[in-house]
Image 1 (cartoon, rainbow, N blue to C red):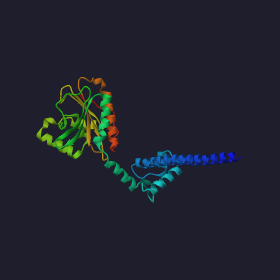
Image 2: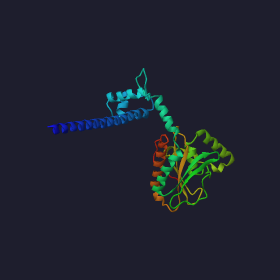
Image 3: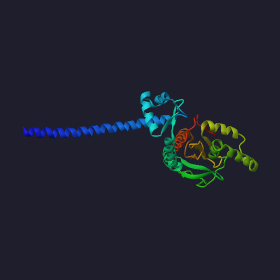
Length: 285
């Protein structure tokens, strides 16, 4: 009988410990799930271009209005969301803005480009380069050789022509409008032959397709396809250009261009930029 009491007591202690452990695990899972749902609500608010209603947020987060209201209350208490007193609409508060700015301060387009472009090289086996708009024009700052590599006199630090390279035309069409117009007028005065007569058509096409191709203009047999990368303010911190020579059949260009565009879009979004709506990739030769 004493033995039975001891066994019941041992079982009760075990059962209680196990119950406490299970309760903690369930509570932990609930907290994690709640955090995830709260972040989803915050992301939904951030996706709107301005103040938004409770119903719109609930629909975007795929929650009931009552659930959404509770999460919005918690986010408001944390300073992440605020509510307009008169209209009752919700928008991001200072806490979310500080969080976003802190994340942006840690972004490095070149660090992000390393992984992104390495993947594009692996998928296409083509050579890629990254350019910025320097004082002398589009300047190569990164070079990623393909297999087989492209042999050209161009190298890191090299400057590409603004109007006779695919890279330069992307900068002209989508870069700082005032500066690009200044460059056009300067070229027309100093080297009129360098400015294409159909420059307006080039710009319109690039604005639609977000990509352009030039073949053989700088180096015979070399095809260059350039695509933009946009930052948070819609500016062009870099342009990514893909090079191919006779070792790569033109029939593979369509696939390679789609890889380039997808990679530049991914890179844009990784640095907080917004990718514009684009249409079918354009090709010129």
